[in-house]
Image (cartoon, rainbow, N blue to C red; front, side, top):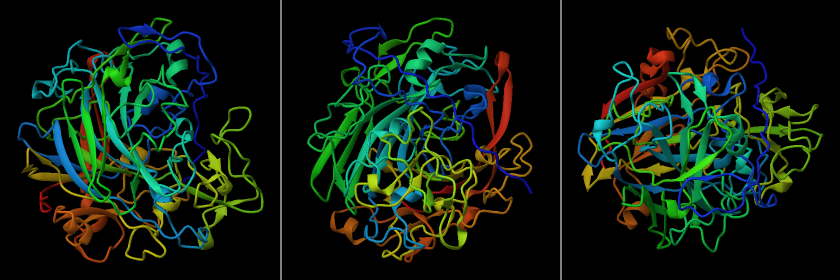
Length: 561
């Protein structure tokens, strides 16, 4: 038996405030108006793309992402890596009344976001070995086992945020608190880059890290109705009031149950995402362009500045295959869909959670579930432990008034690991997100893979997984008492959705949760994630490192759009 020790957090770095700077060339952060400057979005504390080796980036003070069961799509057709179209249906939640009823759940409790992803060029990002990256080209494919000279890589996540709980802009420091509205959904383009040279072991200089939060950082912009960002996307110039605060007059808000067309394609100005709400007949977009404040941060490990380079982020690859990887990420994906799970934990008991805009106390430390309370609820309630951090009182919620903590659930015993996932009981549980297989140029992707980064999150002290040998790595993650988690959600497919048929949607959808009535294939449930996948990464001096970071199974596409 093993016990999980409390997770360690990187110190919340004080942000140097920045005056607005015209994005006409490289700029350096300078002192400015402190009242509008955003808190640095520290990837040691928020939902970022999971890196393959977080200890080398964040030391022992990290969590970085958490649990990301995914569906990855493969096609050797040109355009499959840079012009992708999906249909999706947004989940619907139960009534907001009596949210603490045992067994009742909401989308934000199960997964604070789900997203569509794609690999992008970033010549200032890991591995810092070459200065060019031809866009939309499979010439960028390079196995680290052959050479460390891979082009610099970023990863985009088009994230969707469910309604009802703690509103933005708390996202900058509190993973999981990501509501835009009491009843409406919103979405945002998140582009993650990593300022690390794995060959030399160098990270970005400390002055710059004080402004951007951590070596892994994000360019962020809500999807807006006119495609114009409401504030600078890059973390040096972003402001809380503009970049991170949703604006219903400008941002695209969507309703639960709406059928959404999703397109991600390259343009001369950068990757463009377009959301077409086929139910409300509204649309929105965002382009990863300098005009919208997207930018690189110059990799300068020995300097004392934080230089912003206006940049159009373009897709890295032409196709999507097992070889079109982001070489610093734990997952093996390029084009795919993922659920971010394993964060929310209930905080029940007589002792109130202190009110705070960002889930931080007056010293800057994350607010914990107070002593004397319990995590979980009902028969699974137990004393609080070290991962019950970034906690919010239900009184601060927009609609669903329930106490909760949003740290990574290192004990794998929170809401995500219980049987409250979509299962057809819509009075108690949400419906699943539905998403189609993508198409490119109207043509199908011929294969897909189910992948779960469970080995990455099961390492000591959380679990016994040895990522070098694969020993102790399991498809059902262990809880903090050493037993398997109560439940682990899985993907299935369905043909039945009247809303999709009404709007001309696709015939087959993937869904995610428990046993959902009407499923046409559950792919063996948890066995769908397959077997251990060994991946190769760049090591010190250009050496090769192999790790088991995922379980993966590749299948022929049995769910065509």
